[in-house]
Length: 620
Image (cartoon, rainbow, N blue to C red; front, side, top):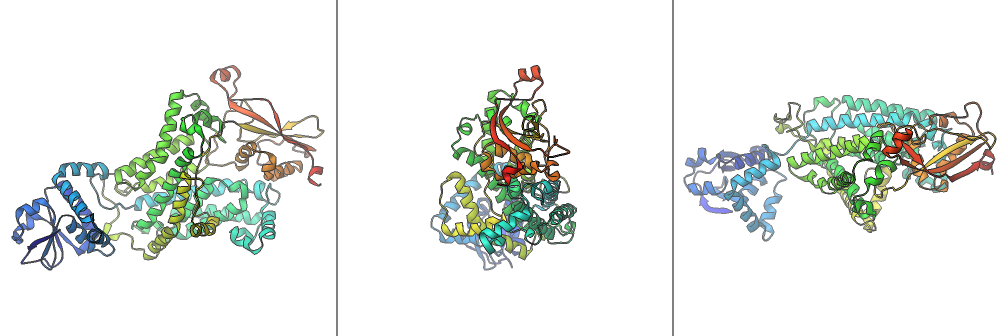
């Protein structure tokens, strides 16, 4: 509030006087000093009070005092807001204080309460922020995040590269050279915008390999730190092209998460040819975009579990099914499935807490952000130990790195001050303005995506829905919801071929369950995309999975590119005349069954999935 006191010898520029013996005061003065820079001076009243005898000593003990060059004196909350208002862009708190009824008395009352209970406030500050309440910077975390993202891009490109001929090559299951012309014939000229891929320029096998090779090389450049912004843009363009070309084989949530992560990463990347030449922190708005993505990913993943109507999440029995029904379990999943019921239910409860409550810690002070990072990372490690989810867990952990600011993620060690000179904060105007524009445009869409997790039938406002229809095709704003409904059974498809229609030989897959005696393998971070799609196909019918019919057709021609995706081709010399598919219910064995038989899996009675077909059936 404004004091009736005026000083006879006012300072040349605004001067804030504070209690130098108050630990709470000195911590927050450092934050305000950082914000206002050279616009405001700060002094302990113990050193400066004698220069301003007009101010009674009890006023210094009661509240901070702001002395303006005009001679006016302000104290308490208004003094703080006026001091901050001297920094461009920070006048809005003062405007709210002055113009919105009830804000001033409420703020003054809160200030008085804190002033009377400084020891409690100091303890609370230390608990939430630690010893440094200055605005966090993320230069070291940014560098680690970008290197991790480069490694994940490398894994994604190389993993798909070794499968690309059999999946979407000219002799693969879903040739992109056939897909794109069919799409253009169906929707006309709009196909180019609806399906943004460089494969419109060239859809040959050679070009697909060029995209993968270029992506792998650019990933290495990002890890090294060469032209990170340009590298991120090209990585996004190449992986988006492959995602569109990959059709159902690149339709997983981690594929769109990688694209959205790669997109927001552009707004924290240094605008330098060599990353290590930049010691500046990334723009705060860019960091907000990354945090918003992590917030959306975790919160939606938790909320949809409760709003899906699946009772197994409500009654905490989801893990009675998850370990053995998930697409590609690891060998540790078999052991985790034998955990006592109380431990499984407790794990489900902890998971829901981590995904629904903890995401709000992302926006909290430092200590709670660190707690959120630790919980998220622990959750991802737990998921990775029991399931093969390719690079998804690594990508989520990479996003968590930007919750750890330079106070604890410093190149100088966890207890050293930030390695970034705070006077050298990023002033990359173009990048900051671009980040603000992206945040403004995408925030309503992200809000509706999050809201739709709470209300799946929610109607979107028409303008937001229209805008989303344009950006969704580029995979830069996405909804997430892993394990929305827990699968409670596990059908497995066994594909067999025959030369005479009497004797049948099975095709063995490398990673999905088949042989009952084979332990669930480790394959992450590589993703065997055919094996993954077989899990989805088993949950439906072959009519619902046209790609599966194309897969069978390739087996009937003994396509070398397709059979290379399998562990064993029982017809190496000549293709089979007939192929059929049978579905079996699979489940983990019990401990007693494992000891008696040595089997990791048991299966029930067979049911037809695809009747016996020959090439003649495809020629009709």
